[in-house]
Structure formats: C-alpha cells, structure tokens
Image 1 (tube, one colour):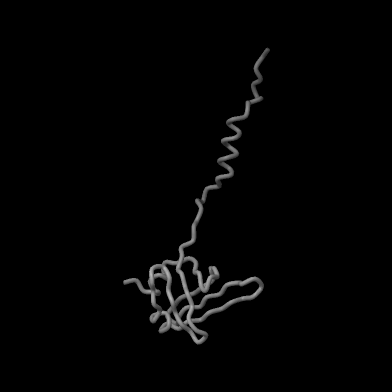
Image 2 (spheres, helix red, strand yellow; image 1 turned 90 degrees about the vertical axis):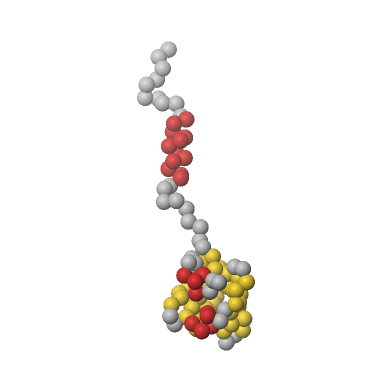
Length: 106
C-alpha cells in the first residue's frame, strides 16, 4: 500500500484543492505547499502526523489540517528533451532550399 509520503517523494508537482503547486517541501517536520492563486499567495502546512494520517483513493489523497479537509493529487511534471527541436527544424528547412553557391550554368 502506497502512503502519501511515498507519493510525495516521487512528485514534481501537486494539485491541492484544485490549484497547481510546484513549490512544496516535504521532510521530517511535515509538508509545506505554496502556490499563487491570482495575486494571492496560498500556503498550507501539514505536520508529519497529518501526512501519515492522509487517506488515499487512487491518485487522490485527503488530508486534514486546522482549517479542514483538503484534496491533494501528486503529479509528475512533463519534461522535454534537452535538444532544441527548433534548431533541427531550421536545419531540415535549409536542406530543402536550393543551394546558390554553385549556380547551374545556362
């Protein structure tokens, strides 16, 4: 059975109460999540005990703090390759262009 602590260890991003959060820390003291909601900074802080008591159903977790119950989804971010695809596209287009260095004689 997977625990929330295990899911957090492999997560790059969280969805908490419908808000995407890239800024979070999880350590022995607990879980701290921060994200912007428009112009407002939202912050949640859960103790290690609250994280341990979280109830999971599929990818969703429910955990409680002093303000009530929160829905949390642990997600992995999608990363692109390190290579620049635009440069490759430019090179492909150059190959399609006629070469004017050696014009055809008429």
